[in-house]
Length: 303
Image (cartoon, rainbow, N blue to C red; front, side, top):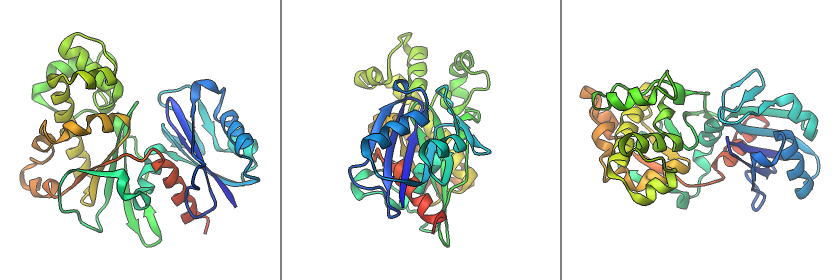
């Protein structure tokens, strides 16, 4: 009955176990992708250390598009195939999904101390909830409540185009040098924060260094663009149940969301302003959220 849970990002991979009731306590481990030749090898090392016995199923949230039982990481060279993972672990059922899908499946299983309100609102208890991930890349997932639990369709919205913003035309022209199609994640991600800072200051700094220096121009631009993009995404999916931010960059930028006027670009949408103003914004700080979501998905589909 042991189930293997995987949260595979572009840089690191978290792995845990479930017995069908959720993520088992003290089983989550983190690995650097660079230390392993493949995901199959990484999982073999984890199972060798944990020795949980036979694995019946795997659910892996992968930071990249999933198609036909295979996935390609967006920011790492690994190509993942469900059949290969089944052969490597002996699992009879392997399901791949985008990592943001996995995080959205966790929304009903998060501890109270792992969610922090950032912008108040009045959510629709039956409305869809949108999870926006800001880290090495950017993407979203929308959790819909259905009779037997949650339904979270795939998305690659981080590679849709940044919203029109007259005050940022020069910045957009500069960003096109790295990505001609001007995806949202070119600005709204950890590397995006570095790009914004380089444009405004001429300095190349890591996101950690930027946050430590608190450069107002850089952070103001990030928060304003985040409000614009998030507003479009929430309206596209009528995410009246709430907007949830997750990921390392989201945590770093969270203290600046309210004071730097996120609401000033998130709320104003003409006749739809009241809808946006009612959507609360919350930070998720659970490192194991995607693992919990994988456990939730397997519990729904393997009843």
